[in-house]
Structures are given as C-alpha cells and as structure tokens.
Image 1 (cartoon, rainbow, N blue to C red):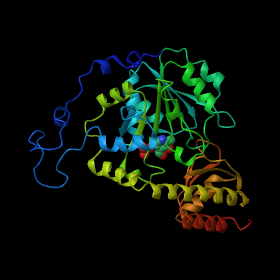
Image 2: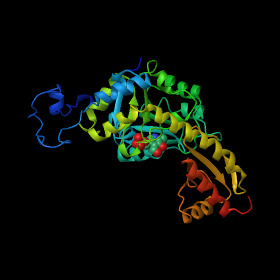
Image 3: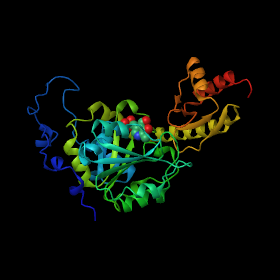
Image 4: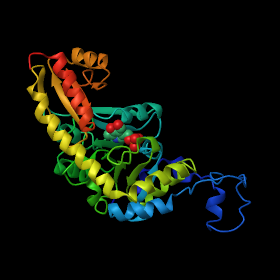
Length: 345
Ligand SMILES: Cc1ncc(COP(=O)(O)O)c(C=O)c1O
C-alpha cells in the first residue's frame, strides 16, 4: 500500500499553512470584521478559499466525493502544485511521454526538477517496456500522462496506463483536459483503486471557460489536503467561481456545444484529406485535429495571411499542424482559405 505522506517533500509535510480569516470562522452570516475587507461594494469580500458550493456541484456531475476534489487556477496551477508537493528541487525527477503538453516541462524547469522525456511510439502510444525501466529509480517521483494527448489528439491505451499506476509507486498525474470530447472512459473510475492517481480536468475546453481559469484535480483526500496546504489561500476569484457555477446550472448548453464541436470534428476530418497538400489527418479524441502536410510552414503562413490562425507543431512532429475545431462558419472559412491556397484540390 502506498503511503502518500512518504512521497511528499519533508518541508511540505512539516509546513504550517497560512490560516485565513475564512479558515478560522466558517459561518456565512454576521458582521464581518475579521479580514480587513472594505464594508462597501459587491466584490468586497474574499472568496471561499475551498470553493465549497462549486465542489458540491462538481461532485454531482463527476460522481466524485467533495473531499477528493481540488480546484486550481487552471490545470496549470495543479501541474505546478504536483512538482511543489512531491519533487525536491535539484534532486528529484519527473517523466512524461512526448510530444505532449508543454507545461509539464516548463513547470519542471521552474521547480528545478529534471524531466525525463520518453518518446511515444509511431502510433503515439506509450512504450511500456522503456518506461518501466525508470520505475525503480527512487528519484523519480512523478509521471505525467496526457490523455487525450495534446498535440497528437489520441487517448493512451487504458491498460497501459493502469499498468503504470499499478507498477510505479510514485505519483501518476493524468491530464484529461480534453476528455469531454472523447468516447473513451475517464481514469476517474480508478481513483479508489490507486491512491497515487491524480486526474486533472479543466473548465477551459469543453465548458468554454478558458478565461475563468478553473482546473480540477480528482485524487485521494490526502493529496487534496497537501494541495490545499500549498495553494495561495484565495486561488479562485468569486467572479470565476460564479462563472463556473452558472455554466453548471446550464449544463444542457454545454452538452449541445460539445456535440456541435464533435460533429464539426467529423466533418473537418472528412474534408481535409481531400486537399492535395494534406498527407494525413490523425484520429482525434479532442477538440483539435493533428494534420500532417506536405509543407506545413507554407500552409501555416498562407492561413495567417488570410487571418486564420492555426498552430504550427512542426517543431514537435515533422510537418504537422494543429487545428482547433471552430464553429461551423469558422470551419467553412478555413476550408475556403485552404481552397484558395490549393487550387489543385
Ligand atoms: C493537455 C492540456 N492540459 C491543460 C491545459 C491547460 O488547462 P487550463 O486552462 O485549465 O490551465 C491545456 C491547454 O491547452 C492542455 O492542452
């Protein structure tokens, strides 16, 4: 059985966290003279540091108990917290499977943690045998798995990920930022079986709230407590908590939007290969398509000149472009622009 306390940095274990006025008095009514707030205005009070109302709603939709939920200032805050809780700077290591989301490596550098980069195989899946060689390294504390993966758009094989969870005795953080666009199951269902599992999701993608900066981590309550210990006390503003609550109270709208994006993904996936300069459109479980082209730089620049901005990922995967699925009207404009660029269609 994994002992989470033993995986946590000693200074974090010993840390006495900041105790806010809202930590000390938890009631909602009264004359509040405890937090040096201004008595005037609508946004004059500090937010709930533990976002209790929001977590109650999230718990209902995700089927995860409230004490297993942590909310961060975007998933990016949660990624950084993983390093700060589990990795000693200049000593410990983390591992990820590349190409993948760039923040794992940036956060590793910020925290002075060595990042081991294991290339995904030709099908963009994990090479388990090579990865397993690292499991016995006692400096390896953290493995990041992005599924569905950015920028390759595919999900990792469920059994491979479960193998890692069962064989590696450090922390496995699975980033499911794009899970709502996928038909594959979430790893959330493994939370009770693996105490070393952290599943990250976000309101930035399917919920359309990238500006609100709210990311979720689902994990075991002990890990949630350590995240709470390290986070800034008021990491999610009242305005942003309300923006998410509003969206959750209109969940039907979210479902319709996700459906529209998935339909457009199918449409674009069928149309794009008809262009002579497109070599391959990879299958996608996300809200974007990875497209291999004959001359990615030329297409990228030609689209920018027509005011359509996609992402050139050629530095990560040879001649590959990443195209976020837009509204139908936006996708039509993309298709028209590609027709312009390629009269040979
Ligand atoms: C895989 C992945 N995780 C996380 C994020 C960022 O999420 P958030 O907006 O919640 O910080 C992104 C953003 O592109 C992403 O691609």
